[in-house]
Amino acid sequence: MASRMNRRSRIKNQEQELESIMISRASTSSLPSRYNNPFATCWTRPGVLAFRFPAGQSAEKLITQLAAQGWCGAIIGPHGSGKTTLLATLRPLLSVVGRGVHVVDGYEQLGRLARWQVRRHCRRNGTGLLVTSHRPTGLPTLIELKPSRRLIDGLVADLCDEIASPITPAHVAACYARRGGNVREMLFDLYDRHERLCRPAPVPIS
Image (cartoon, rainbow, N blue to C red; front, side):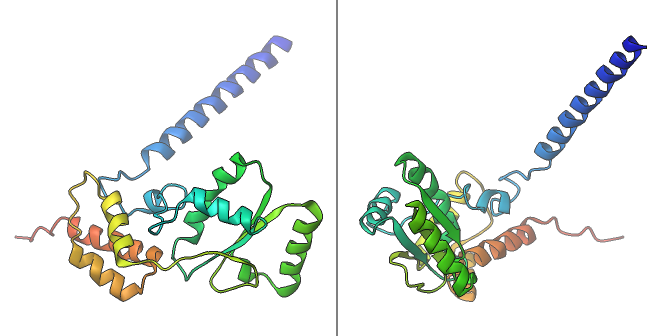
């Protein structure tokens, strides 16, 4: 009886391991290739797409500035300007310097009471506070993001590096003008444009 139960247990474990392997393979194989569309979200999401710093700025300089501000600061910028991407770039450096910093992405979405509670929590625990917001929040501004056409051109060049993309500077200029510097929406538009340009032409029915 015991041997039969052990055998069933081993079979169940083997089935679970096989299922795990199949799921892993399926998820890996389902990832789109950058050669198919370099503007797919799996290549442009924060943490994957590198943040492009304005001239004269760097991650190290921002950490130094944050320290000078008492480890309290706000990343200000409109929708899709790269605030979350910048946070993903700064997080590893914050862990390296060994300073506890509470991070809030979308600080202005919190109510007045919630913001006060966050600030009080940081004061009581001796931690810093780094937030993102679309507008000034009363916290010292760490950096204000204003995506430029030059920055967009650099992002597109990075994404299309060594790829024969049908996207032209004219396409990028049109998206920039239409979206008013919203990088996220521009990348969505370029994804759609890339799909349309690469889609095979329909075969006429004879």
